[in-house]
Image (cartoon, rainbow, N blue to C red; front, side, top):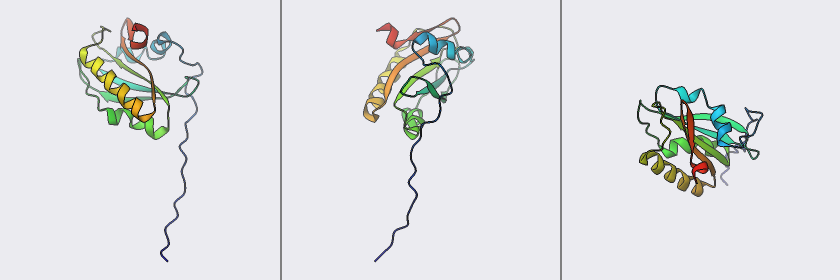
Length: 141
């Protein structure tokens, strides 16, 4: 009889929150990410949230140039899946300061929502940060 090697079972563990306050509004996200809104190139972050909407992790998933950022959904959501996180907020900045979403932003958000739906992840919001404000997809509905 052939014996199989025994491998230890590793459980996915969600780490402790890195923020004390839950993110209860887009304004709270903007306040938390205010420094990132000033970046000189377009960058996308995924905020990993626990069940109480406290930030567990802030993950930079893509960095681009002055006016664009290529996001690969599989890479963007890899950390979320690996950490067993159930809720996210995607955030990216516009170095120009303009917070109106482009058609590319809307296409990305739609694709990300579809991917999250398939993976059982709740995309709470998609946001754009500018030097003087923000755009929230949820707020605009």
